Length: 486
Ligand SMILES: Cc1cc2nc3c(=O)[nH]c(=O)nc-3n(C[C@H](O)[C@H](O)[C@H](O)COP(=O)(O)OP(=O)(O)OC[C@H]3O[C@@H](n4cnc5c(N)ncnc54)[C@H](O)[C@@H]3O)c2cc1C
Ligand code: SF4
Image 1 (cartoon, rainbow, N blue to C red):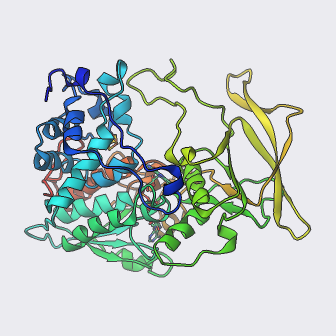
Image 2 (cartoon, rainbow, N blue to C red):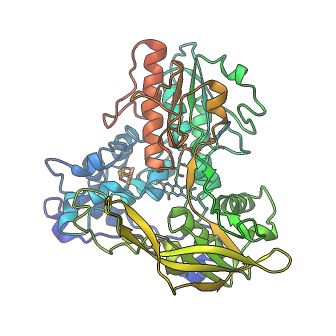
Image 3 (cartoon, rainbow, N blue to C red):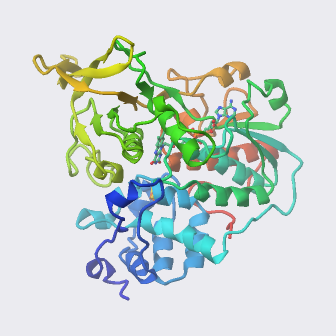
């Protein structure tokens, strides 16, 4: 195999998928595995640039050329050690990250970039398969206690780092099971929940305590939380955005997260499906064209919807980079997900005006109008309706995938914490709030974001907590690696 000219010799490979007809029959992941040799070749495509822009494109500072090189050399154990040194959960990011690293890959200027995310997915898979990923509990305990509120990727990363530093860590989660949006937002066809469970087994064996069905400030008193030496708030930002138009309270207008959460619980055997949150034989319209909207499309097709339509208020993005986002920046280009490929009619520059109901208050259609964004005199963009483009669409189920407006603010109020204008909890560069022993990370601090950022913030916050408790910390700073977990 040729590393020197690998980028010229070997084309970028993606995983092939099973047919749409087959995959929509269930909620399982649906890709065919690449062979070991094919993966070695993908590693060989990395040019090991003098200045690896991919490395700074990654919010975790993953040491990308190093693990690519190890995979090229077929040294998977070393690749795992390198990857784990900056990322606690590469099996999540390897499946779900939008991969800003690949947008910053130097090879990407002239060719398809190195398949970094794909390689990142296969490294921990090999690690679990070979039994290299095992619990690594701390040798000694500091006697300090830390409470982590929220068990999404931010909370889990913070907990694992703080436990490694020797603190006694308890994670509080209001839901039945641990995982946050990884478990209750993202469908199984993107992330099978066994992937979360096998990592949780390691975290438990390392000595982290998990308390589920425990809603801090509701069925767990705030005063008890304050007994911990330090607190890390990782409660996410799940206050749903509404669509305040006529008919919004009709039976059949449903929040995307309610729909996705129930489906994930049904797939997990935790609950039974209910008619109002099921798409079978319905004309479904998903309002909102982001990740959540795409997950609703994939789920509706698996339910057996009669038709699936997607609306997005913004114009259709360009298919390739524009001058507004030159390399190595993240390009806002058209994204077609595997769920879109499974069947959906996508509409851009369209705004929903009202939901129309039958005489029993049940949704039967909705009315839209096309829109355009115009510049006002001050230069600010303004949405303008295009007269004469009104249209009525039959619809039995409208899914509102409009994102989140910020964290629910009960915790911040009860703990006396400052928040910003979007109700995100305010913290300094070291993730410390205005109350010295309370820290915050992930969506709860930065607003609705990405898994890679949640893991990155969880790790960074853990280091700050460790410094606060001990006066210094041996936990790593971003991109500098840490104690190998395997
Ligand atoms: C449908 C959907 C699809 C997505 N797809 C992707 C994707 O493909 N790729 C990607 O990178 N990102 C994706 N995201 C975004 C990503 O899931 C989030 O950015 C990430 O999960 C944030 O992590 P977090 O740990 O900050 O918060 P969360 O994952 O939201 O976890 C917060 C946890 O805190 C718990 N909690 C809150 N308050 C309390 C309390 N008072 N007491 C106890 N527990 C509490 C909540 O129950 C929850 O479990 C998606 C989001 C959604 C909704
Ligand atoms: S976590 Fe995301 S940005 Fe970082 S290396 Fe992996 S795919 Fe790239």
